[in-house]
Length: 195
Image 1: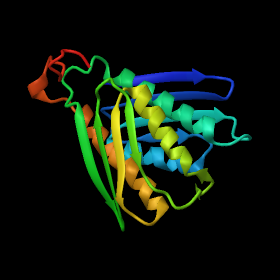
Image 2: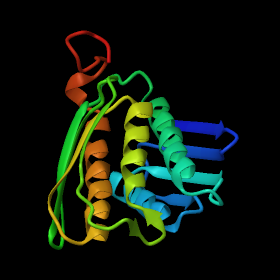
Image 3: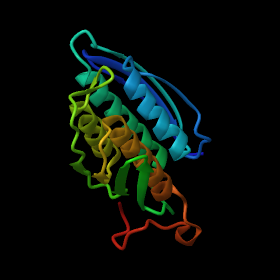
């Protein structure tokens, strides 16, 4: 079973993450930011990953450090869980409809981190969470995990639907990319021989 576990402690946050790629979508998540918890639950359930997250952050300042550092720790745990990446499919993408919204996520478990983010929010907050922090989480996760990740809203009006569709599209993309392809058994999916 592919599992990763990370403890990340700084002056701003104290984070524990346990992540199982080949899970059943079970989660136990507490970041101190209710809406972020809700999004990470979507990532777990729709990605088929078991995710445990505990965060103590400096929320008396704002949600930035908690959000970004949670993305870093989760990305590190995902990368650890992938191990040598032998036999993975490597690429994944998903279109995710949610009512009036259509999101797309496409990723490459390349080892070359990059984020393209095209999510045009029209509100400053969803619940108590600043909408600008979602890009911070996706960037932190992609860079720590070593993903090339593109996230786009192709259409949408409701900001809640837009970001939830992004997380669900990411979940389905991860599920596809991290799947072991029996045709790649014992091989790295690259002509370079390394990811």
